Amino acid sequence: MPPVLGIDLGTTNCVVAVMRDGRSELLRDKQGQYLFPSVLTFGEAGAVWTGQEAVALGAAAPGRTAYAVKRLMGRKFKDGVVQKARDMYPYHITEDASGYVAIRLGDKDYSPEEISGLILADLNSAITEQFGFTPEEAVITVPAYFNHAQREATQRAAVHAGLKVLRLLNEPTAAALSLQSQAREERLTAVYDFGGGTFDFSLIRIQGTVYEVLATNGDTFLGGDDIDGLICDEMSKQFEQSTGVKLKNFPLSWHRLRDASQKAKVELSHSSSCSIYLPRLVGDDTFAADLSLERLDQMSRPLIERSLTICRRTLDEAHIGLGDLHELVLVGGQTRMPLLASLVEEFFERAPATGVNPDTAVAEGAAREGAMLRDGKGALLLDVTPITLGINIVGNRLYPLIPHNTKIPVRKEHIFTTHRDAQTTARMVILQGDNPIASENVRLGEVVISELHGYERFQNRIKVAFDIDANGILHVKAIDEESRQENEIEIRDSFEQEGKQRADAVEDLQSLAPFSTQDTPAISGPFRECELTDVLCFLHANARTGKIEISAKDGGGLLTMNAGEIVAASFGEARGAEAVRGLLALSEGDYAFHEGGDIKGGVEIEIPFDELIG
Image (cartoon, rainbow, N blue to C red; front, side):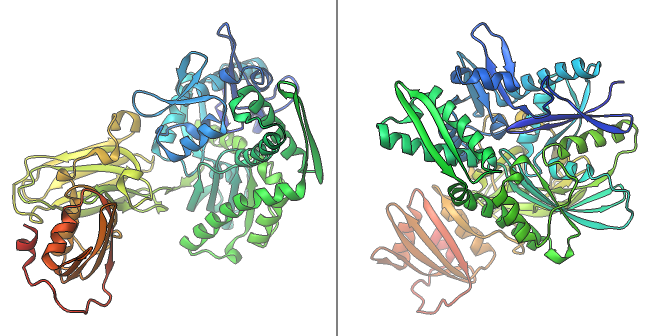
């Protein structure tokens, strides 16, 4: 069988490696370059161009050219970062029938994974031409902080290219695999991966061929592309000030300026200043400007500091100090930026490991893993869940069952209950994300238990179990403890499981509340009709004491609870039971429950909760 490809499918560039005779070899173009731009251009007659040719042709055809699509893979069109991308890139980003991103090139829409698949297919042809074999299998790397939908989109891109994916390997882990150390002593490695479009940070314990990820974190919309954008915005403002012309209204001109900005950034990695000169940028208007390294550093520093904040949080969560680290590995071409290298070295109080090529380490590590998998001697990779997994609960809240950075395989379970009288259906939406507001997370699927006994609220007991196996497959089971009715789902393909329904589209009539009062998520967030009543019922059932601040466009107020009973309320000038009725009549707003505290000040309401709310 042909060798397994190791593919670093990057935002800005792709790198492909194979293991031959025990050594990794890189795919190179006719000029000997191993960085293949992740760019695709469609010709007017339907021809497909990728890599450097697409970069050259794209300047003349921005409406038929796409790049940085990795940032859009597996994302809903309404995602905030997608809306940001619409302002950054000249190609047309739109919405497909399922609510995901589509990219219009010419007169046809393509998914980001279709575009990535075409780029991969072209790389396959180049592999055949250079090495003389037709690729069949690959280990493809992904950012460690990619969610389920983004990983599935990467798999689909490979399928479009005719490749079987043996493993999706996290990029920091792949970089660690490329180190090829034969040392048996245990060492703790920090991998700082600042790529073209994504940032990852992982802490990995290595001993021989055992690679144990202790913690990982990142940002899938933070990278060198953002620094290019800052330069481009700065130059665009200068051009508008001198000519009155908004460059974003001219896609071809914007493409030229963005390309020049990227080249200026690279030039400033080894010089103190550079000049940008673009003749006839718009009409007869020529653009000429100088950019200093000092100004570039000033613009870029907040982005770099943002990455270091992620590093600090990850170290703190893992209870690891800087003195515990044995080595620091820098990955991604952006780490060549002098300011970034300096700030990272200062933060970690050590110089990075030598002998690591930040451009090729990820692909070479993936190729090494592919060869070991083929031989049945793959490294033992002990990973963690990068993002929290849980279900929706009453009040559009996320209840986390498996927090991020939990070692896998793992099994977690919890007892939930109904929160409405005569509730006969329990619908548990499976979510991935770290936002306490359920609808702001990625929906992976759902499990439904129907035909529950229509007891009073808080009487049913439903056990929900999350189980992640060694391959990262999530199994979810829900059991009604009285009837023993059960239902389960296996999350393999988030695109198929979730259909077209958003996480916040599930009727709250069928959601659940935690039965235990321990480890309950913070009780705050937006509410819609009836949800504020549900929240109060939950607090009453669990005998909570504290104050609830409520705000809405129609006014706000305060409720005070003592051991689950409402003892005081204010809404505008209203007090007591009248204020409670006014607050519960609000159609939408935000609430925040503050546990404990001083609730003195007199009891205004002596009406029992059930009578007051009923």
